[in-house]
Image (cartoon, rainbow, N blue to C red; front, side, top):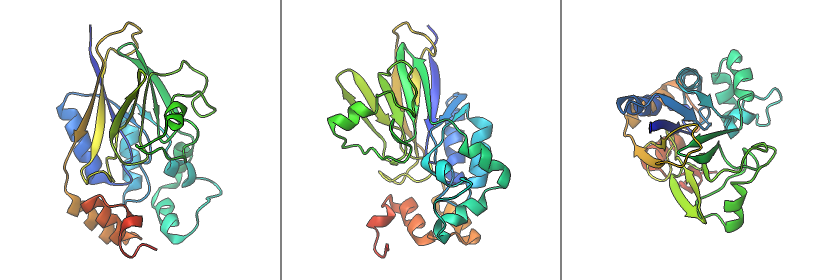
Length: 251
């Protein structure tokens, strides 16, 4: 039986140096299929280039919360710290970003897998690793966001920048972590699914997490040169994995 491998990336957040390091690692492993779970723009300095690269190399790109609100024709956020990232994108990128799908279903090793950015309820609803039984069940539900396809037994998502795996009552929930803004530890992470794709026959199924170091200071210097707002908090997140609201001086 053929064993296919699919790399799952998420939350690049305009960190092009980290994205390139992760893509190089994926290529070195001989993996050619990549699914991006969203939030590849915003927060970091090079959303425009990250969007172009993800569009080129990923067979599926999902819409994250940043792709949902940032390109909107009537942007919800207009303070300078949010507006900067919209202006950094090209006008021709906005329609593509705002119309990306919100979920993606596939079959791997006979298991039905669903991929999301944040939750099955809403792209802006966060689901943390210490989720309740009700929240766990909700990640497997059919909703307006996911559609009414077959109920999955495996769900993968991003958004919280914290890689983890939870198995309950025969169902597997995992978070791939973040490529460009990891907050569980300051090293980019991605996941690899292994198994026969599109086969309903039960077979081997694998899930692996991968950490890839990169030149953090080089990416921070790009943000310095670009005059990006919120630079000190962004730099501390990249260096330490400490979220900005937990840093001294956060407003």
